[in-house]
Image (cartoon, rainbow, N blue to C red; front, top):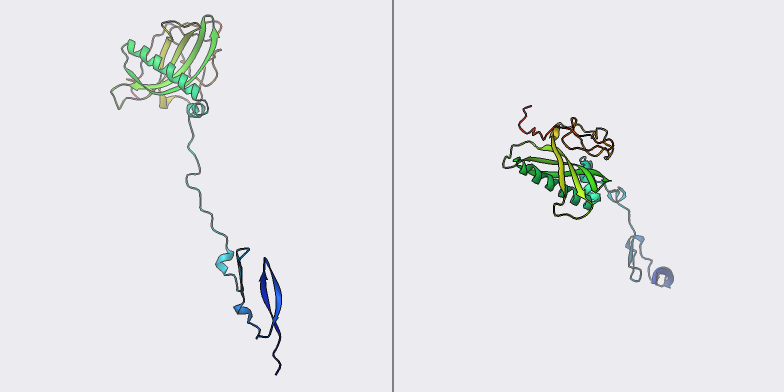
Length: 217
């Protein structure tokens, strides 16, 4: 009897070559080639149904971010603006305490300004509440800050400071009341306050500081 000549695959690098052998032909189910150089293992078999399905994409939790305040957006983009706003707010708080109004700063706000004769004039908002009273409502304040052009021992001067009411009752739109010095990012008092300047002509009011922390709803 003559032995049957068959062919088997032999690994050669990244390919395969045929070599005749006088041995029985192996079955296809037992063929397994391991290419050690390419690091790829080839198997003969069916792909399971689970391998064909794409992986499910997990839903993103809390995809909708909460609406940020205008101050938060501006301060994060320009840290120097927050630093200057906090400086104005601390000066205004000190001014209120000199008038026997004990407030503590809650959050500095935005400001606008212009260069005038002798220095710079700023209109500024900030949030504060009565000190030593955890149940005190948070109020939004308007202040007019004068910064002299040349260094002086006095430094910043608070020319006007008035409460605009409880912060949660103010409208979303910030009205500058026609002030020619400011953008629309600063709340201005409706009736003005003593010493306030709103561009040309200069408007001056006789209204002193009013505290609305004791107002009832």
